[in-house]
Length: 181
Image 1 (cartoon, helix red, strand yellow):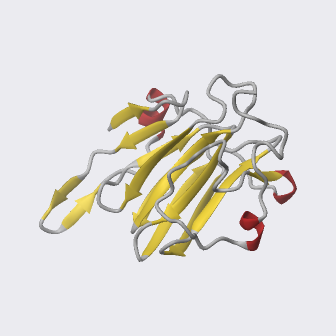
Image 2 (cartoon, rainbow, N blue to C red):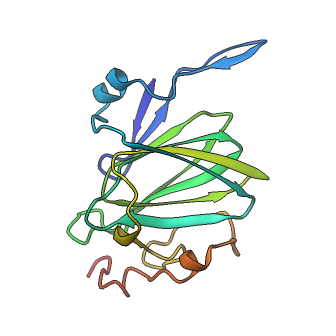
């Protein structure tokens, strides 16, 4: 597999080896030893799977006191996937990394604990699957609004379909977290 470092410390793009022929393809979506060698050593405790239609934007989500690392992949369709640094103590606070993940490129994104995560569906339908390093705890959940000008994420949609909860998320500034401040 190929590991691509990004502008955010620890956030990685992973391109697994894909073995294909006229019958289809095979790839390993996770193998503990190889991923540990790539720096992903945390144990995974929960797997999630979401299906969404074109234009759906989910995020940007994170957990406050029990942050989750996420190994994200798309098994069907395509998404624009984003990791954002929302830690005011970080030298990369307010920056983000975005990448297209789809069922053709088979890429994965490793998002270490402490980053916010979100994605937007750019195909008719997309199935996004991700492994988490900690359990989801609703009382610990937090988030940042998708169009926060402090993050300036170039989402591939102007009017996304949002959940009521995601539509009400605060900006970094409203949370008392201001890039460059």
